[in-house]
Image (cartoon, one colour):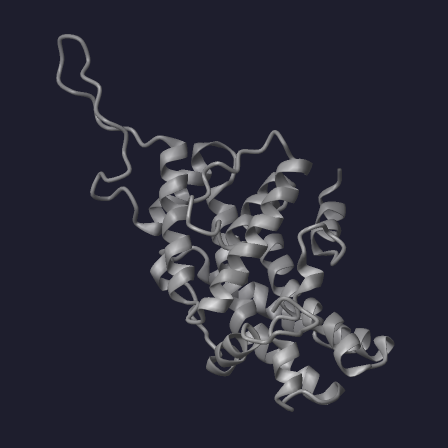
Length: 267
C-alpha cells in the first residue's frame, strides 16, 4: 500500500486503537469551566500541541528510528542514545580459534530493546500524573493489538514488557515503521492525534458545530507541522534529552477525572 495512504490510515480517528474513548483531558477542563467555546477550545488545543504533542511526537519518532529495518536503524538509534558505550548492550565476545577474542558486536535486537526501554523509562518520568501514565499504557496496549493484527509479520516483541504495557508513542513508532512510514511522518501522526481526539470530544461535550471544529483543526495544521518538525530535530538526541514540556493543570485535571463515577470519556 502506498505510504501516503498508510499515513492517512494511521492518522484516521477510526483506526481501531481506542482513541475515540478518550478526550485527552478535555472533559475535566470543560467541567472546570476552562474550555467553554470554540475560542477556548483553540487555546486548549494549542497548549496540547506545545506540551503533550511535542513530547509524544519526539518519542514516537525516536522509537520509529530504532525500529528502522536492518542493523543501521537500531545501531544509529543506539549511538544517539549513548547505549552500548560501556558494553552493557553488546553481545558477548566469541574467541576466534587460535587467536585473541574478537571485538564484541552489537546485536540489532539487543540494541533496539535497550533504546526502547530507555525511551519508555524517560517517557514515564515525563508523565507526572499516574492517571495519565495509565492511560498512555492502556492506549499503547490497544494500538499494539491493532498493530499485531494488521502487520503480523512485524516484530513488536522488542517493546519493553513494562507493567501495564508500553507507552502509546513508542508503540506508534513501531507501528509506523511496520506501515512503511518514515520517522518524520510518524511524528506528524503523533502531533495530529493530540488535537483531533479532544476536538472530536468537544463536539459532544460542548455541542459545538462540527464544521467550525474542523475549520479550527485546519487553522492548526501549520502548528501541527511545526510541532512535528521540532520533534524531528530533537528525536536524534539521547532519551534523557528529549522534550519534557509539561502542563501541570492537565495533570491535576487527569487525577480529578479519574475519581469521577460518571463520565463520558475514559480520560
